[in-house]
Length: 245
Image 1 (tube, one colour):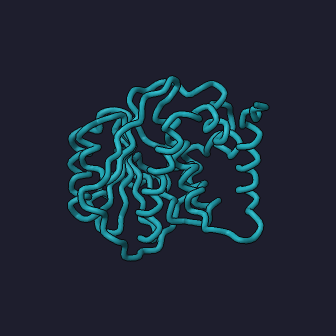
Image 2 (cartoon, one colour; image 1 turned 45 degrees about the vertical axis):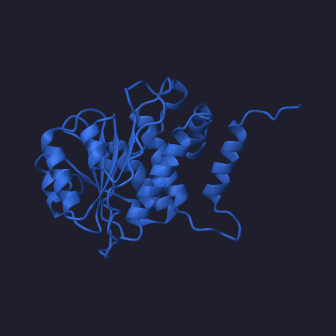
């Protein structure tokens, strides 16, 4: 999703809690992966693989100049002959420890097997973040969670062609290993803002990935980067006209 469409999405959701909630969660993601030098593991459920979020984060990592945002997609089933970046199975979660961040995306029930692996990763010191449909067990395991109850369709104006790369086009992100700070004990699961018509977990993933790239940009005193200027222009073009009174 490009800057113009993200700005349109934010305009549609203006006045709701979702843009702010997505930025807060994106800030948690950024804080967990950047000091640790990367090591971001992204995993879904048996029935849902977060292809689009993985592609968006790869794009945001390139745009923002922070390779730490590019995830390793962990899959429940890996078919023979698939490329290396699509061949990381659940066994990778067993190696998660302090300095790793595990981002779980679960629109429905995550399943006992995944919950056990997430629990083990947290006990080993990994930071656990959750984008979910409101599962209480997963939210309880997460250091920070953003829950989206229900699964309604995205507004038609936001589902035009030209979205993220297809799964096979994901690049294999490289990430240097560096010691990371331990996660805050107890976490800060924030739950879900009030449900909004047309809101779903896919929409929130767009907001989170875009905010992660924006939040990661350092303060600049010189001319704005082209992408920053484009995003600002898009916000201005989609903003309602000022009141004359």
